Length: 401
Figure 1: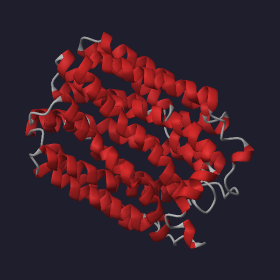
Figure 2 (figure 1 turned 135 degrees about the vertical axis):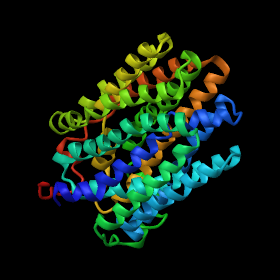
Figure 3 (figure 1 turned 60 degrees about the horizontal axis):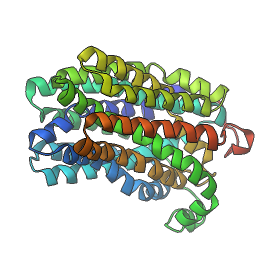
Figure 4 (figure 1 turned 30 degrees about the horizontal axis):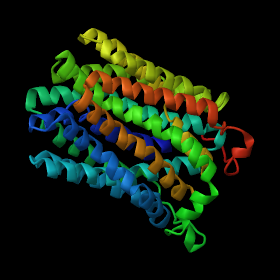
């Protein structure tokens, strides 16, 4: 498979959907607050997409194994169109919660099918770069998304970005339909594609899931939590408007996306932990500095530091999961792997919102900083390096041209 094939089948539709998702980063929390919700309720609405993904990760892995990667990609992308339209026409908080949850279900199918595709098609020694590029493509979309979302909301209202999201997601669905290659269902015993596979895989991989899994939970908590704390801190503690908040988030994403290829090179040449540990140290440091910001410029500088840390870890969690996946059961294992990570993604915004309502936004940022530091310590002290030969999960394939 050539790089052009990867671009059309995986990277381009991923770019479109990450851009669409980025539209809502600065606007969704403010839209929910505009409807009269508290910080905690707003954080729950934001987190419901992650909760929907969390609930669907394992079933999505089994579905990918049963129906193939291409149908799963198309189904996942199409469902995001429908849920975005639902969000755009809803004014009641319960409906927003429902549609955000359903969007997470669609995201699980979309994400698992893409991750499985790359894990199965890219050899070990190039996997870091391929998955870091995948993460970088998502960051490029996130770079443009918040600024466009903020400007769209500023001029057209906070509901407008939902409809832009639906249009972009529709284009991504068409691209996936046209360019994703057909894939056969996985051959093998039935217990590899039904629910019996899940407890068996957990037992067989209990040690790695316990150590690397806990580290991933903390890692995803700070990654997801920063997407909630920065917009609300900028708006309610610093006093910035939605356009300024979107600009800050996009500036951070610009630094973030510029580091995806160096991060992949580091992972492939020196090892996964050489990129992961510095990434979460910088994330923790940046988040700990958020309470010291009191202007557009100071929040911008700190948020750029956070983007630097996140960029160094581009694709790292996906690469670890692909390294650990057993041959012939990649989709099923990655469903479990993503379930663990998405537990952190779901918990991050909810923890931030709950702490913010009780103790204030500053202490919520400090709590998130501690979580990031815990992730760095766990990866450094307790997680084995998966680039070692004994972790090669399948024979090397032809190098991607």
